[in-house]
Image 1 (tube, rainbow, N blue to C red):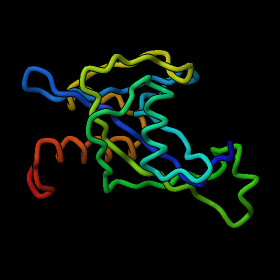
Image 2: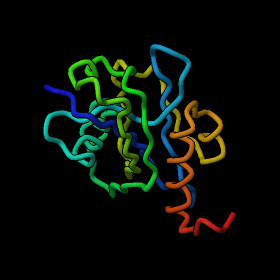
Image 3: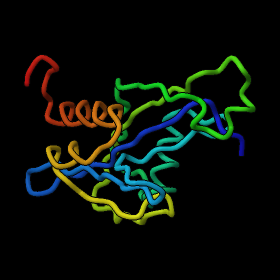
Length: 152
């Protein structure tokens, strides 16, 4: 399948005993903790890609709410093997962020990650490597807590 010119970032979450837990994943090829991430394919929408990547990398069939976050980032195109096919005018690939309610789904890792952790916000945010992931998780956490941006 042809890779589309966008990336998705997805944070699975669940509610348990009055708390919110977020899944974070450690890559198998480096010491990087992140959400589920991957590129769109063919004519997928970012939402379609988020649901597919969530299933491919974590074995989670999207049954709960999928929240499209306002957090968007740009990733330099040299991080993607496909970028050579996209032409010389493309410098960055847009990354769309999502939260996905996982419910009681069991996580089944793909080869991209060596382990995962369900963690409360304070622990999860400390593990994350990239600022874009931290911003997306901050937004998701505040949305789920129904906090307004001006409230700390």
